[in-house]
Image (cartoon, one colour):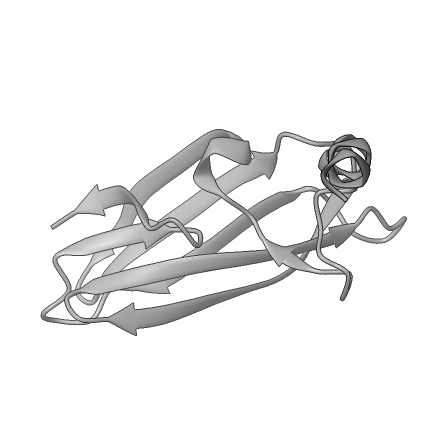
Length: 113
């Protein structure tokens, strides 16, 4: 049984960077040129942009989620499609009480208040 698992693991490791459902959340380490700029002060608005490092994906959607005192930016990716891009650029209003903006499922801090 163990030998069979060893043979299967390399195949799983080479699978596409998205889940079986066809989508996953982009991690900060997988983004080239991740930029965060303060676009406005009242209300505090950030402009966040970057490009997925893999050319085999495209950005499907972007959402935010508040967890405690952090605002998480979640960029959902899927297989590359002709009408979609691996790049993203969007603005987000930072609510009062938020001390950090974090990126991806790992919560890498990309902006401190």
